[in-house]
Amino acid sequence: MEDNNINSVFLIIFYAVTVVPTLLFAKETKARLANMRQGLRSLAWIPLTVGGLIAYVVFAMDFLSSVPVLGWSWLGYNIALGPATDQGLYGILPFVPMLVYMLIHVNYFEELYFRKSALLTVVWAFLHVAMGVAVHVAIALLPIGFLYKYIYRTKGLNHAYALHFATNMAVVALSIGAYFLPQPP
Image (cartoon, rainbow, N blue to C red; front, side, top):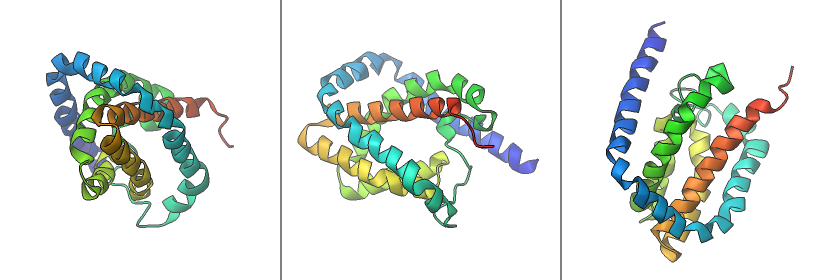
């Protein structure tokens, strides 16, 4: 019971720290969408980012999650999908609009700040552990982060941002879609 209360308090703090600042950027939403439009040509890379994540889920996730250190997660789920992920589709759906709005702003700043060096790209990947994802997921994000860094360096911020946002939207859509797949007995 006490663990549940600690998690609940942390979730409230987390959402206050992430959602409130993005609400302060409401006036920037139009500019962020314009930034995204300018980078649309880099969506040609989406099969590589999403395909890489799907390959990781299909071929490596089960094994890597069984390795004690790599399977560690302080929360047990991705906090961005909401605290009710254990309740299935209806536990996630209420958080999707807020998540999309947050990602419009957060992904822009991730690209702006974390693609300037290889070290910052590694830091970006492992900051996902703070979001509740397991260590092996952070490791799986490294190649995608370096692809974003390459695009940032060769095409610019808006291209990396558009690809990052589109990849996250695909992940959200696939996460929701997974609830419609037949579940093993």
